[in-house]
Length: 97
Image 1 (cartoon, rainbow, N blue to C red):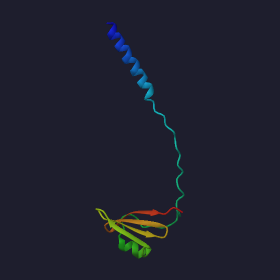
Image 2: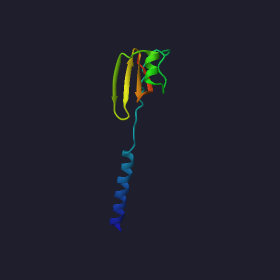
Image 3: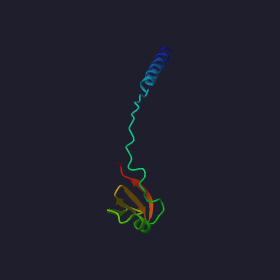
Image 4: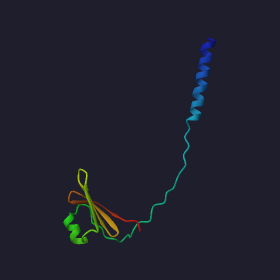
Protein backbone atom coordinates (compact mmCIF):
# COMPACT_ATOMS: atom_id res chain seq x y z
CA UNK A 1 0.00 0.00 0.00
CA UNK A 2 2.88 2.33 0.83
CA UNK A 3 4.43 1.64 -2.59
CA UNK A 4 1.19 2.45 -4.42
CA UNK A 5 0.73 5.66 -2.42
CA UNK A 6 4.31 6.74 -3.15
CA UNK A 7 3.84 5.96 -6.85
CA UNK A 8 0.58 7.93 -6.99
CA UNK A 9 2.21 10.88 -5.20
CA UNK A 10 5.19 10.82 -7.57
CA UNK A 11 2.90 10.62 -10.59
CA UNK A 12 0.70 13.45 -9.30
CA UNK A 13 3.74 15.60 -8.58
CA UNK A 14 5.27 15.07 -12.01
CA UNK A 15 1.89 15.67 -13.70
CA UNK A 16 1.40 18.88 -11.72
CA UNK A 17 4.87 20.13 -12.62
CA UNK A 18 4.26 19.27 -16.27
CA UNK A 19 1.16 21.44 -16.37
CA UNK A 20 3.17 24.38 -15.12
CA UNK A 21 5.81 23.86 -17.78
CA UNK A 22 3.32 23.78 -20.64
CA UNK A 23 2.12 27.34 -20.29
CA UNK A 24 2.66 29.29 -23.46
CA UNK A 25 3.90 32.82 -23.72
CA UNK A 26 3.41 35.01 -26.75
CA UNK A 27 4.52 38.42 -27.80
CA UNK A 28 2.40 40.57 -30.07
CA UNK A 29 4.39 41.90 -32.99
CA UNK A 30 2.85 44.72 -35.00
CA UNK A 31 4.04 44.94 -38.58
CA UNK A 32 3.04 48.14 -40.36
CA UNK A 33 1.22 47.76 -43.64
CA UNK A 34 3.44 48.96 -46.46
CA UNK A 35 2.47 52.16 -48.17
CA UNK A 36 0.50 51.27 -51.26
CA UNK A 37 1.08 52.70 -54.70
CA UNK A 38 -1.18 55.29 -56.25
CA UNK A 39 -4.77 54.66 -55.25
CA UNK A 40 -6.24 56.20 -58.38
CA UNK A 41 -4.26 54.04 -60.84
CA UNK A 42 -6.45 52.10 -63.27
CA UNK A 43 -5.66 48.39 -63.59
CA UNK A 44 -7.31 45.62 -65.61
CA UNK A 45 -10.26 43.93 -63.93
CA UNK A 46 -10.48 40.20 -63.28
CA UNK A 47 -11.78 38.18 -66.21
CA UNK A 48 -10.84 40.46 -69.11
CA UNK A 49 -8.78 39.03 -71.99
CA UNK A 50 -5.13 39.62 -72.89
CA UNK A 51 -6.27 41.27 -76.13
CA UNK A 52 -8.46 43.72 -74.19
CA UNK A 53 -5.65 44.52 -71.73
CA UNK A 54 -3.17 45.19 -74.53
CA UNK A 55 -5.71 47.32 -76.42
CA UNK A 56 -6.70 49.40 -73.37
CA UNK A 57 -3.40 49.54 -71.42
CA UNK A 58 -0.81 49.10 -74.17
CA UNK A 59 2.11 46.73 -74.56
CA UNK A 60 3.67 45.65 -71.23
CA UNK A 61 7.28 46.59 -70.47
CA UNK A 62 8.04 42.95 -69.60
CA UNK A 63 6.31 39.58 -70.09
CA UNK A 64 7.15 36.48 -68.02
CA UNK A 65 5.77 33.01 -68.58
CA UNK A 66 3.63 31.12 -69.09
CA UNK A 67 4.65 28.93 -66.14
CA UNK A 68 2.94 25.89 -64.59
CA UNK A 69 -0.37 24.18 -65.11
CA UNK A 70 -2.67 26.03 -65.49
CA UNK A 71 -0.31 28.40 -67.34
CA UNK A 72 0.23 31.69 -65.48
CA UNK A 73 1.65 34.66 -67.38
CA UNK A 74 2.82 37.92 -65.82
CA UNK A 75 2.71 41.24 -67.66
CA UNK A 76 4.61 44.08 -65.99
CA UNK A 77 3.54 47.68 -66.58
CA UNK A 78 4.81 50.92 -65.07
CA UNK A 79 3.18 50.94 -61.63
CA UNK A 80 1.40 47.58 -61.65
CA UNK A 81 1.60 43.93 -62.71
CA UNK A 82 -1.15 41.85 -64.31
CA UNK A 83 -1.41 38.06 -63.86
CA UNK A 84 -3.19 35.89 -66.42
CA UNK A 85 -4.42 32.31 -66.26
CA UNK A 86 -4.62 31.09 -69.83
CA UNK A 87 -5.96 34.19 -71.64
CA UNK A 88 -7.79 35.99 -68.81
CA UNK A 89 -6.79 38.31 -65.94
CA UNK A 90 -6.83 36.65 -62.53
CA UNK A 91 -5.20 39.48 -60.55
CA UNK A 92 -3.74 42.97 -60.93
CA UNK A 93 -1.25 44.21 -58.33
CA UNK A 94 -0.26 47.86 -57.82
CA UNK A 95 3.46 48.23 -57.07
CA UNK A 96 4.51 49.78 -53.75
CA UNK A 97 5.12 53.48 -54.13
